[in-house]
Length: 327
Image (tube, rainbow, N blue to C red):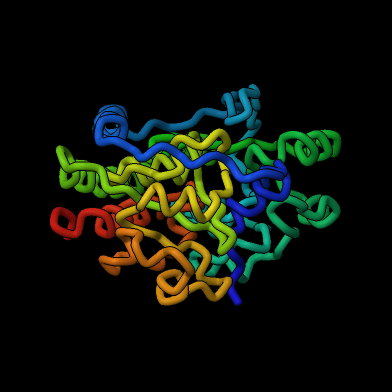
């Protein structure tokens, strides 16, 4: 059985976001916030990609944790501690330089042949050291406990921490800069930007569609300030959990029914949840998404991993929400 949205659920475990009480029902979204968000998102991400530059080493960059990190020479032995970073590295043609990945790195398929260095939230430090990396790519989840240990062992570590879809483009640029792969990055970013522009153009002016993104059968979902929420809004959706008081809220059945989503996206299919099971839940028969049979299974990797394939997730969500506009 495939693992359930490892990036998102690891955050649940490490940051203890599960609430002890059920939050109040989120307000029914209106058209204005989502349409405004789409317009704001379109502006900074639609500029043409800059011409590829050439990195000069030693190189000092500011990483996703706000740290100044000096890269002494082009890294040749790279370890990725997250599946999203692995996908960036492979997209930039760095497969031969990747010597280790986290256990959830399964794309592209060749990533699975790389030595595993443990879980996303709990990498094995001794395995990392044994692989003698000259660069380790981590995420914000590693800053508190893993990063200090890597630094203590003298390992150059860069934190990659995109907050939204636009930030993924910046992350690709940053990884390209520290590895000298700007030419490759230009092609990757151009392809990503083309899909973003296509989706933004298609949903422009459309009434936002109320959407519930189900992470687990007990109704955990993505709230405000999350990467997934940004994807939903850019795709022309109005997240029914946008008014929740936490990033990863657990909705009550009553609040979900009251929110009345037009579309339900299931990112918990590894838990054997099917559209039919959702439709059969007590009291859900009057939910618009159920009545209109708009319950779709989504590949959670595409929306939970802030890597190059997020534009595929964006496109999928936009098609689910606006099938008349996005073909």
